[in-house]
Amino acid sequence: MSARQEGRDRSLAQVEIFRELADDARRRIEERCRWRTYAAQETVIAREQDSHEVHFIVWGRVRVLDYAASGREVAFDDIGPGGSVGELAAIDGGARSASVVAVQRTLTASLDQRTFLNVLADYPEAGLATMRRLTRMIRQASERIMDLSALGANNRVHAEVLRLAREAAGPDAETARLSPIPVHSEVASRVSTTRETVARVFSDLTRAGILRKERNVLVVDDIPALADMVASVRGG
Image 1 (cartoon, rainbow, N blue to C red):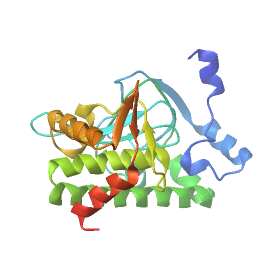
Image 2: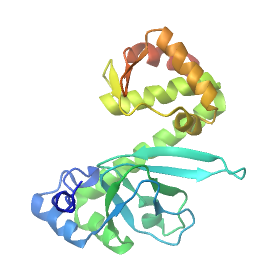
Image 3: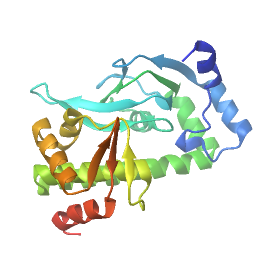
Image 4: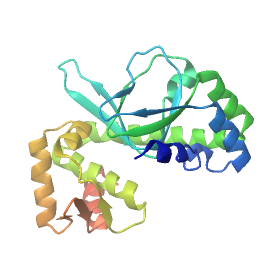
């Protein structure tokens, strides 16, 4: 992407918490942002860092992660265009609870803590959207904790594939296309298992007619069947 194109892409129109704002209000916020492009694998936020800015993902993708005492990487989520990171530290003033690393070349727009909090106070639509986003994060975290406590490794992989499918296609879709194909080691990191287990489960789901590959796309052909598999072990 050229520098000229990057300049044209400096808009918050697709960022989740600003979508309901009027154009002039959003432009005023854009003028107060710090815009920066990160290379793949470059750190956007470091865990325990004493910083409180909020980053909005304009294009590209970042990964929220931490490291166990053994050095093993634990990935919490990948966040693409329209998402944001850093809200918790901005709201409570605490240290960063996780690191954020660019998965690919990424443009973020950031607001310092005071400006971000003022924006939430000045624009109720943005404040409500932020509350909804944080509520969704809490629900997802609670579900993941339950899965890690109650489900076997195979079932946790099923649940992660289901989450990715619904994220890509919507909660009511029957099929989904995941591109690029989820990397086995990354899925393993999210559900606390091994990449060998993930590979085996993907093969089992392929034989069952739930997954198939098309070039660089993983097609989930039967989301309802996958959802039934997950519900049967979750007890819901």
